[in-house]
Length: 69
Image 1: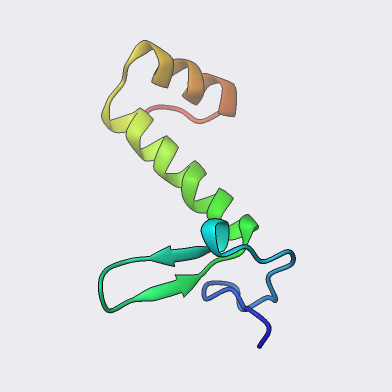
Image 2: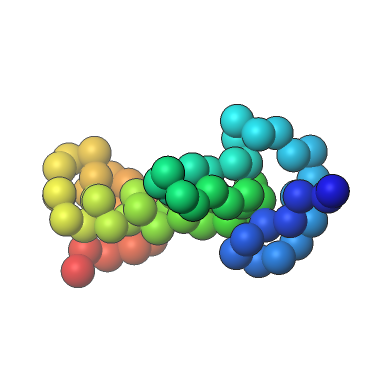
């Protein structure tokens, strides 16, 4: 069976269970492609940088062209 991303429904190239398999809780597990994982990571970085405005977070927001909310 070919692994497919649960979010974008594309075939996952070079599937590796440690990198692409996400366990949400005891009953739910999903496979996510590297592109979707990157989008989730970037979104969470921006949210954390906005919520906790440390010096490093401010540099991240400035570097990515996003402004504080």
